[in-house]
Length: 80
Image: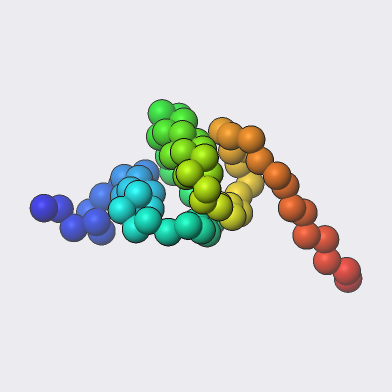
């Protein structure tokens, strides 16, 4: 019964990730999804994404943190 504004950053992040599980979207667009997560939650995130991919889903993840799953990396290099 606690509003999400009263949650810690890690708790809010876990709540956001939990929303992915009930939304049933084929494509997940995630920006820094592991920010503020502890190690156990990071590992769980890897399991959730791997399961989503195994069921035919796609995940596009922007992050500076190494992901706990096999990835393909796309590097965008701009011209100045």
